[in-house]
Image (tube, rainbow, N blue to C red; front, top):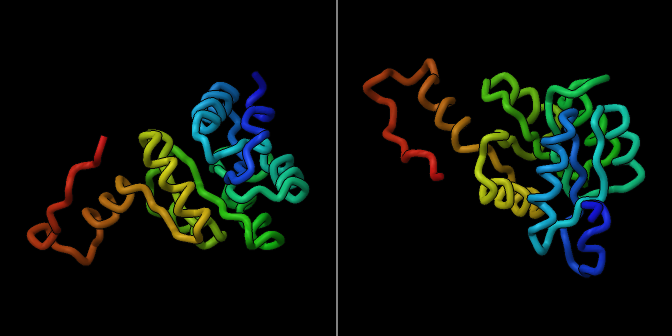
Length: 165
């Protein structure tokens, strides 16, 4: 069944648009999201220019945006989308766990940042939070930021709970 046609009879759902240049990942992510009863995939794109154009037309609630995509990067695409459609919540979904990507994404207007190796429960939580206007940052990135912060001496670094799996 086409993931774009599944769950069309639902009355109250969160409309999701996916952007990633890897077809297998895109299809797998769509399949995972379609299993959630309150989520619906309304569109997908493999490059930034197509994504920006389709998102303007479809007006999804949430966009899951990769950073490393053709034409523009996902951060610049985020900037363009949020400039013209500030009500659309964009969650960056990336393999990059460096703080400069996180900062650039947030400056561009992303509501959150999720790592591609996150568990499904974390993805669903991030989508739900973004849909309510609440930011979500992957705990793994937050842990790395705290542990590597130059203003915190090694002895002062807090003990953090392990990542939930």
